[in-house]
Length: 270
Image (cartoon, rainbow, N blue to C red):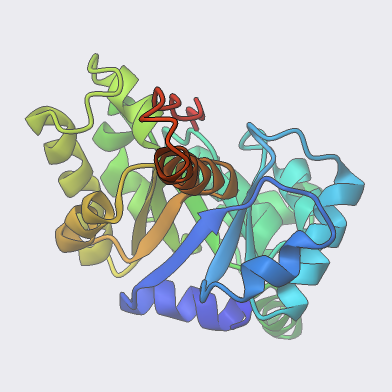
């Protein structure tokens, strides 16, 4: 899959499944490529990745047909441009709460390399020359995705979804649960209602809708039933831990050591 195909599938509601990749080991990419993912999620907001590491990860996964969706540290158009220059297959902007932030990010993702006064006028609705419009449309094919993870963002959702350059929204469940005053209460009816509101309104607007969740596949299926078609399941770190803990429990039992204490899950609040 490439970036234009990913953007199209987001908007047409086709289900795509990926995971967060934190490991920077050069041999890790071959293992990931064999898992049947549709894309990978690279998070520079919470994971300490430098520009060189991000660059080789983007280039490698892109060439394996796994578009790397990169979350930048903040809704900063210059950070988005840097990630795209590194080879990002799409940009995720964190903690968006108003349409103005989306338009600013759209300037970097959909209209680069134009900047400054010319870009400001285009974002206000003044079209470029036809040749430049066509060039930018063909050049800037990576999807723009924004995190919806607060109550103010839900209140502004209609305005956010009205930005034409936006391709999808992505729920950040940890931040959203805290904004609702329900920290990590992911089964609470109010939290689930908020998620369903976000997902259904995004899909009704003809955009992709997703969530990054660390729970079991059954939980992801519940969000899919609400309308999510961009499913980011857990991470390489947590999936490794779950599998290793399970195997060690079995191994110790088979070796006559009895049942050992179950390890606590990794704390990744992203």
